[in-house]
Length: 318
Ligand SMILES: NC(=O)C1=CN([C@@H]2O[C@H](COP(=O)(O)OP(=O)(O)OC[C@H]3O[C@@H](n4cnc5c(N)ncnc54)[C@H](OP(=O)(O)O)[C@@H]3O)[C@@H](O)[C@H]2O)C=CC1
Ligand SMILES: O=C(CO)COP(=O)(O)O
Image (cartoon, rainbow, N blue to C red):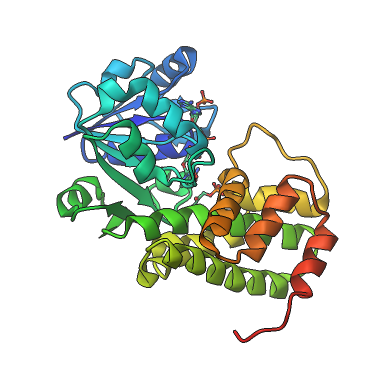
């Protein structure tokens, strides 16, 4: 079995490292100098500095690397995926394309599966999602992820599992996609709460109400409740809202403290908050925390006004 990973950020690199335990893996980077540096130095100094590349991992900037490869992982920011696939559709269509991105495409309101299918209609589209920091995966720490496909994907599940990467499967693509996308928005909110010193109790309340909000939108769009309760929803929400390893959480921390945040860092929840607000409006789903995050990111609202607005909402049954 051979695998190509397209996108040499932290996550693509980590997955490439772990999957090279079980077969040949090629990691594609868009920047030729970066690819050459990684191939020579056997590490990704730019995005995942402490992880050494195993022998069966090679790096290239030549997209022809996907020719003859059946399984392709897409590991780039969600807002870039549609454009990337449109540019390389002729090469990628017909393959198994697995999105490792977490988000909702702002231009279309679609999740990764629909974005893949729009560009590559003959591809088998899948999503790999769940609680996993790139650094943990690269270090070989135990990790469990969800693989979501429209049809049963037992064979793919077995092909991608490694001794440390345990993969569960589901056919609830909507639930898996939305859990992974929306938890990033709530993680920003959790970071804001901690950054603004509103306390651990407030964070727990926000995570719980945020989880209810994730479920409301996901179920309205056709997700199954148990998927939200699983790794891709609850699992990833807990991880990202409680760890400073999370960039979404750290971005929220900076917002809460009134500090700047490096604009080059990937923070998927920022665009996804806007996309989710639009989806909520279109489908008549109330998303108060998500709307606050979108307003905070846009600098339309102060943290104290956001907290006051959430606390003064009409009292209701839980
Ligand atoms: N990091 C993590 O722990 C996890 C990340 N994810 C998800 O994985 C996805 C990628 O995140 P991550 O790897 O961490 O992000 P990084 O910021 O570390 O890297 C993003 C990568 O995408 C590449 N890229 C950006 N735009 C394009 C484009 N238009 N065409 C091709 N490549 C492009 C960048 O290239 P360049 O270096 O040249 O800029 C870079 O290699 C996100 O959706 C994230 O939510 C999921 C689970 C865990
Ligand atoms: O999705 C992740 C962990 O599961 C990574 O989170 P961040 O993108 O917030 O770093």
